[in-house]
Length: 69
Image (tube, rainbow, N blue to C red; front, side, top):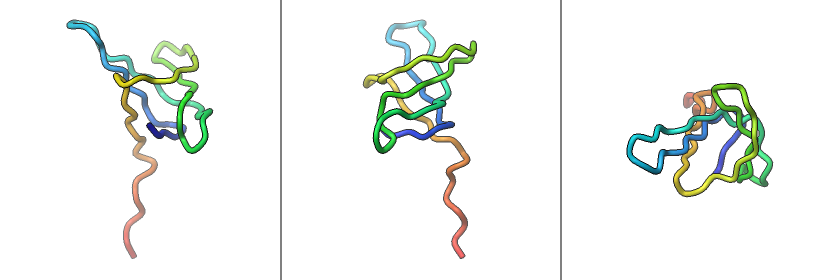
């Protein structure tokens, strides 16, 4: 798993009816974009997380490839 500041971390619900949790990555503490990450939840709380296999990184649109010249 590799992420950068501004990406979103989505942790999928593990049981029926449990919603996904989405948080913004505000700091990457591992080498080369690896966990742990400092994330900010929708309610404003920040915490450290080392995501498991039920999580995916959604990369921010700011990192789109520049147009070819």
